[in-house]
Image (cartoon, rainbow, N blue to C red):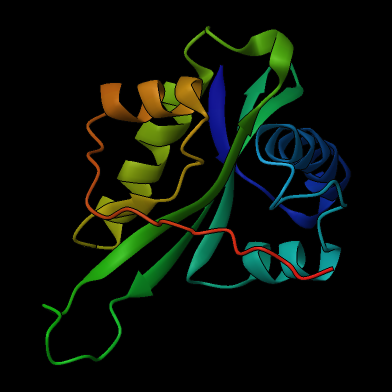
Length: 157
């Protein structure tokens, strides 16, 4: 298995993996996520820009997973310590290839990507009920630093 950087020629496979990811998100939190297709212009911009990449896990000429990573910076608020960091926006492994270390290899590749750019850390968001992903991230050294909370409001009528 190897990890490589995506090109625009990989767009169809990446979009199929996004279909899987978006469906799983919709299944996990139907109140907030719905099935859709990934925007191809957005993917092209990530693939072509310097501050982002789609890293692909490939085995026997089959793409079996991806991680979309972007370089970012903390907002210029006086209360925040300035940092440049890698944001792991999305990651997905083909269902049949899960529990084989593909996710771990993709996370290692993201960490290397960030280290090569001399960034301070890797940050990500994960759905609170995606226990499998949380367990993977914790095994790979991620810790919870902030929590998003919501309060559903009653609608009249």
